[in-house]
Image (cartoon, rainbow, N blue to C red):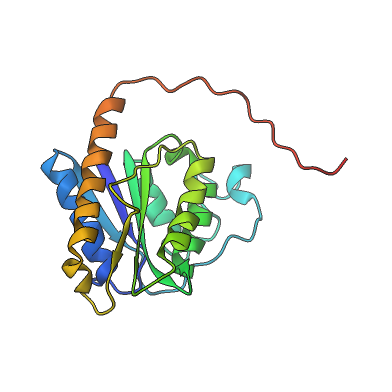
Length: 209
């Protein structure tokens, strides 16, 4: 089984990578394959709500994906099909996750949702001082919509650091990341060959009568 970890920082080897790598090492010690994917520092489009990905007309050959194919969204989407679980990590900017990561997640969850739905997931955030819990909540919101079991740890999935590498000095933060990895491994092992629960058909609505 494989866990895909997505580094949502524009800094490839910064503190977000330090935290994700600590999670990955725990997963590896429990027998899981891991891959850390960096989203890079190039622009990522936001979703424009065109619905083309749901219409089946995005690509003539019928493969799934966002109609915009000029950034990393579809590349990461293809990896989601092969993954059994996910960890999304981000630095905190103004009490929010990196905007590039949010753009990616919104398009990814919509256009490649079938490859994420029902799979365990976790989020983690890195901050200098504050705003980490608000950013963490933002990252978890799409997971809740997609029936994804959210993996927790011994504390909120947060580590602290400013300069690159400083998060490694946060002993409690690194312990939290290791516990997160072990908890995810435990959940994944418990889900092997288990059937999905029967779901009621969706009944979307709004409040205008």
